Image 1: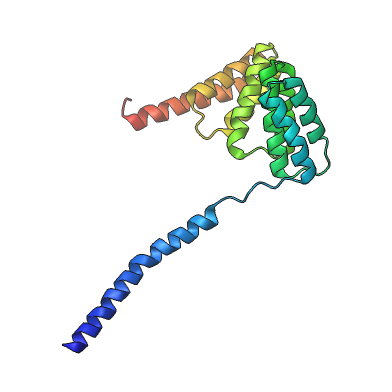
Image 2: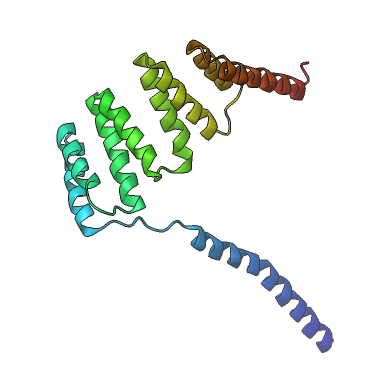
Length: 195
């Protein structure tokens, strides 16, 4: 009987350890998965305090001046670029300066610091801006970049891009994107069983 209890106890301990081990690994994985804290220099933080004060007081001109000073700093880290451009996009939009808003987004996109999931929406903002300005060439350029950066782009986006190209008398690209819209619509129709 004592031998049975020892074996049974060893079995229970093994089962408990096996159950606890994945939980412990999950906790360790969560700790490892936590993104690192943003890295900001002391000089950057000093300017960021001025930016925060101006934003809180809704003094957009002051915020933009401080952000321009910030963006002129040499060797900004990735975190610093993302903060500065994000704040400047917000400040120019709040101020209602559409040209500065678009220019800031363009500059930000050219830095390579834009998080992947923001590339599509920022290009879409630029396409809308240039469309409102009746600059079809730039609207088309940024709308195509939006479509290319957006994995969920579909029939509607492809059709819009095709029509933008046709407005510019660029029939080969217009037909390419309209064809892609038709093909996408057909494949969705087949997948849904409505064809």
